[in-house]
Image (cartoon, rainbow, N blue to C red; front, side):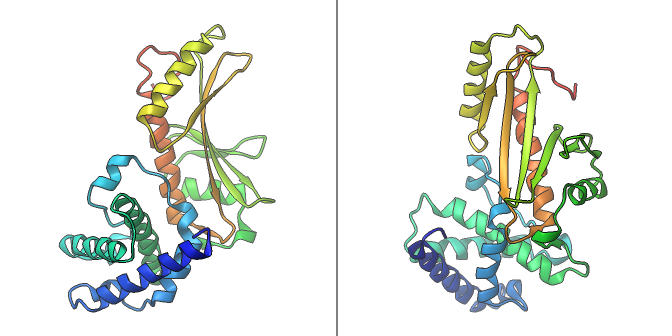
Length: 264
């Protein structure tokens, strides 16, 4: 929704989707207690926490991400997706745009529904976000996390692959940082760059880069999330786990053992 035209088009599509769902007695309970205006607001609040996914993810049936207590039947959720994709098509979106757009927006709507059902608040105001809060959240979710001397949070056991989380309060950004260090200071920069290209060709939803260091070339990836409107903690945990899993996927491609794999 980065331009007025795009926002208007998306708002119209969501209105149509809401109308089409409410007209179906087997689906209308999905939006129990929710209004279409609430859905629009939820897009603005939560969209930055929807992580990019592998292309294949958008070709498959999307799974419910709200807590299991408020899941609807699987067949009903499948019908909901069909209804949404039909609404998007009617609203003028291209066939190629619809699978990814519908999956991302349904993840946002799932979070909105979950927050309606929460007994305890699972949302941080932007003014209260700190690295200590992130560290405590990780540990509460069975992640071994600690604060580093530079203020970053290092999450290890419990994630697929360890990485750092940085909070920049001045710009209100949460940044995931994954790094893999060469097994030798004399590792060939050319071979590391070739490996990085291979990873980027395969792991298309996360950009990997190479930087030089005194101990040899380093493979790294960064993912920046804006928390200008606050932090939905469920979505933050899901984003962190996906970032970690993506980095693990890259490391599993290192058949020549160019990097130190710290989980093996």
